[in-house]
Image (cartoon, rainbow, N blue to C red):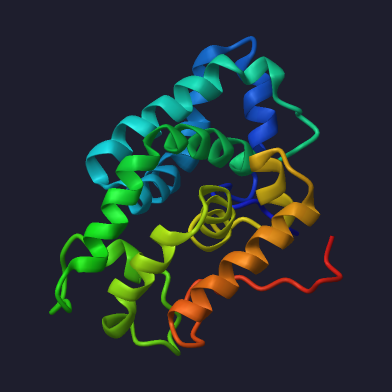
Length: 205
């Protein structure tokens, strides 16, 4: 049996929670309990912990206000929530760019520190210590629309179809943007791709 992330066996799906919350607004708190931490982590990696708190809160405020428009045929609400969060992050493009450029200028880490979030992307086969600064610089140079796709897949752990739903674009557009973003990252990092934590076959739709 497949259970959506954040949902325990026997619990209602996200869609069921949202549907119930239309008549019982307090029921929406269950969605917050399931997904607030992951939305906060995603926003913190992109903007820093202080701004992330506001983004997370506004994400769920917006979701609550828009719950009557949610398609309850879609059991998992994560793409919807991360789409809202990504739109809110879009209002902080300059702050995100400054954060990434600042991380790129940091000295080589000795453990801990603000740059840890960037290193979370790095696969076991890649040296996190060597790539933190280079990865931050590579991400900073990506067009915003490409960075959004890349980080929804790598940081929010969305599949291609889920990322497409989050951004309101076709799956083919997600694949194209992700391919270009990863190519740019590989070029910047000498062939390594620490963002390739989730791979899907080109045949997966």
